[in-house]
Length: 124
Image 1 (cartoon, rainbow, N blue to C red):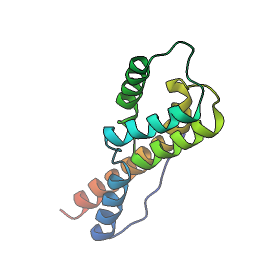
Image 2 (image 1 turned 120 degrees about the vertical axis):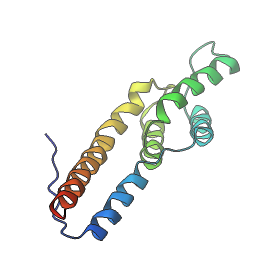
Image 3 (image 1 turned 180 degrees about the vertical axis):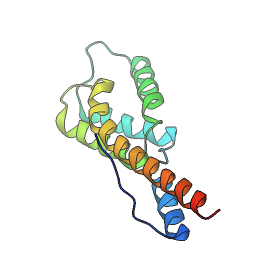
């Protein structure tokens, strides 16, 4: 199980760390995700018989899933999928590049938040 021990004694440093991790969790706007997936579509083989409408629906569905994740991680996943998939990928192909990275950031945010609560409680 992943766990972080935070060794920060001043609130200002802790606040900077919290802000940095929070910023790292900011998702990519859905328009940009759609653009990345459209670019990816030109690099892989599309499913047989897929129309432009089908592709638009597929991109919209994937975008709805990927918009939940941090921007840099989504961009990395799209790049890795483009490098490793010959055919249009399932959501699972993206997810395997995303989830463990996001989990590390979530755990770090939890540890920093717990430290903030502890510091605040001890100063009262």
